[in-house]
Length: 157
Figure: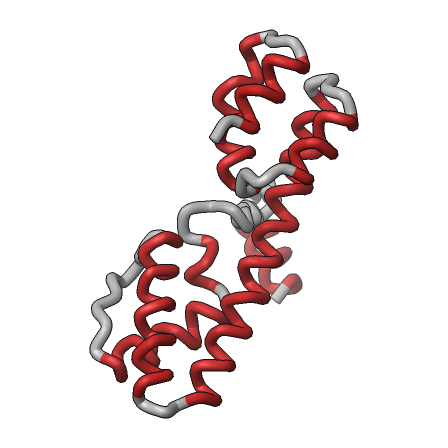
């Protein structure tokens, strides 16, 4: 192939340009459609069809979560215990993975913003879900608030 390329370049007298590589796709684990490429969603989709649960082509994470709960309930009532257990296990693994990513992103963002490690530990031990904390932090991080104000805002219920 390279020999053919060099022959064409020599015959045409053109200067070769470097072939453009496709830009690597940003594989963000927290994007709006990240859950669609997971084992959990691949397992959920056929079970939802079998149970008669409506599921859009590319549902949001919350919609997929709701469908998962309905499917698990229907599988239990139908006596399909092993399929239900496998679905719940896949969902649990995915949500734990997602939560770890959220905590890592929140910690990195707090560190970059100059917030104390004590704030991160307080957030981690609080009762507010990690994704809620990250969303709140992204909303207020540029406001220049004190650590006490940030902590109060992030941990409000």
